[in-house]
Each structure stands twice: as structure tokens, then as C-alpha cells.
Length: 469
Image: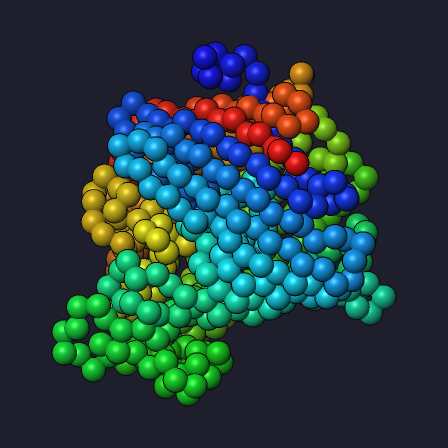
């Protein structure tokens, strides 16, 4: 009965407007997820904040209750609590979001686990930001920062920053470790200007903690005192960044240096962006400058059959294994060649994961989720990926979104990678959504995977969302 209803009418939920009667909200989502072989498709499970399992056809129930900030108040509070249950071969309950926040003007402080992405780009259609993509459950942390860009100098400059301290879980080899996180971004040009420039950076570090299976090593317990925190904060130590400092004594660091340019008029907005990842000081030698995420997005400001297009290219095949063209032209020397950066993996620690899922772009697939098998590492992290996402509105107010990614995978090796050894992977999905009435909406997705890195499958999701208030 549910299937026949879903096939005849579909849903779309837009973000609730912050009016008086929508500040408080309670919603219930009921979904059925499955495939022909029990492995849920890549674009069904990715970028879902860890709430859709990789394996296990299942029913999903998600209940959310919260309160938004009142935009008319200078001082206000908000909260959100969301629980997610899996009902199937593997039944499980997740506290998928829970936080409490307080704002004062453009600034806020909040504590708990909150959904967010870190980086500069198109958040609605991306295949996943390189560093922090919304692919895993949100970490618990305490966060201080701005809620958006704070305008200064007659609105010609915008400043957006965050500073946070968080806690990793104890599912891997290291327990009781901490997250240090900060970012600073600038916007040049008024928000209404035709042209805006964006520049900024983000910095994350895993630090502290102890090995759950002590091996008698000197760093079975990592420093977590104030001296260690100051080194983590400043990225200091025996090196500019301490990744090579005595087996990550002061933590493992990663982040991205981001650039963007936006053009907008009354009809559309165009954003060109670049995320340049780093896990050591080698970024300054420009040796790995060709690694990163490049994106171009088009967003229409009026409903139409096509309302947005996102094109992205992700390349991580350098990792210090060869000198980039720019570095060669400027005669930059790489002092650490031939050591590899090895993105999202951590020597002596767990990779950049939380609750068993990768924190970075889902296009760099965890070994555990692959055909090749393995643990919580990212062995085939030298990737070349082309991605396109398109969304729009069809007649009868049916909202649609399509994703297509084509990716090649390999080990980072010296000399440069051999194309004949690449693992090829294609993944695609199509979502249809329709608002039935003010409270009820339905959705359907079909997705397919074909290639060498993850299991070939065909499946998708059926969903129903009901809003109580």
C-alpha cells in the first residue's frame, strides 16, 4: 500500500521559513532502503550524516524535534534532537543529532552533535567537500563562531569564523582522542554585488588519546596537556605541522586552503571554487597544489525544469609523489620527497573517521566499504573523479535531482600512478520528490553502482515525511 502511494505521488520539503509558527518543529521520516544484493547504493548512503547503512536493506524511522532561532531577536536560543532507528537484519538506534545553541547578534555558541560541512563551495549539490562532507554522524563538540558572514567596512568585507573542541569515539585503535577545529573565511564585495571573491582556510587535528591495545611504545598515550594543546592550536612542533613529528606526537592535522569567485544577477548565480587540501607543510612548496577539489555551480533564482547544475573534479593523485607543474615552473623544492601525504589516513592513529564512516569526501571510499575489503583506512585514495549534479522542478511540482560520478582509484605510488592499474567506478542516482500537502510529503530514489571499487548494485529508497508543526 505504501509502495503504491509513493509511486503515484512524490515529495519535496524546503527549509522551513523562520516565521513565528515555524520556529518550533517536529517531523517524522519513514523510509525503506534496499537493493538487489543487500548493499545500499553509493548515492543512497553517502552524504546522509551516517543515518543510512552501507549494508543491510532496512526500514528507517527518524524523529526530529527542535526550535530555530527567532530572526527578530538579538539574543535567542535553539535546540535540535533527532533519533534514527534501523529496523531490519541489523537493528540499531542512533542519536543522529542533538545540540543546544545560544546566539547574540551574528555570533553563537553551541554544544552537542550538529550537522555541518566545512569548506567553500556549493553545499546543495556537491559530491562532498574534501575535508568535512556530512558523510558521517556529527561529532560531539563545543563550537563558538559566527552564524554567517559578518559584514564590516560598509558591507564590502564579510568575515566568517569558527573555533571548536570535539571528541572522537572509541571504535578504532585510539580511544579518548580529541578534535581541534577552526576556520576563517573572508568575502570581498557586498552581499548584493555582482561579483564576490572568497578566500579562507580550515584546520582540523586529531590529538591526545591512548592506544586501546598498548604495544609498549612511547606513544601508547599521546600528550593531552596544555603544552600539547598550544602546539595543536598553532600547528607547531618540531616541524611547521607535526605530522612527521615523532609519529604524530602532537596530533594529525589536515585542512584545506579555499578560493572562490561568485557572479550573480537577477536570474542566476555562478560560483567557481577550489579546495586545496593539506596534511603537512608541503602545501607551501606547491608540490601537491594540483591535488584538490574544483567546482563550478549554476543556480537559477526562479523555479524551472533545471534550477541548478554542479560540476566537480576531484584529483588526489599527487600526494607528493611527483612535482606539480606550478611547483616546477616556480622552481619550488620539496624537502620531504619522496614521502607521501596519504590523504585521510593517519600514521599511528585511525583514519579520519567517526562512528565507522569517513568524515571527508565519500568519493575516497573506506576499505571496509569496498570490494577489496579491509578496515577503517583509505588505501585507494589516489582518485580522479568527475561529477555532475542537476536539480529542478517538473510539472505538478515534482522536484527532481540527479547525480552521476565517474571515478578512478589507485594507490598513491612512486613514480606517478599507472593508468592500467586504476579501479573504475560509476555511480548514479535519481530522486523524485513531491509535497502532498503542508504536512505530508513523499519521495522515491533509484540508484545504481557499476565498477571495481564498490559492489555492483541496483536499489534505492522510498520515503514519507510528516510534519506535525
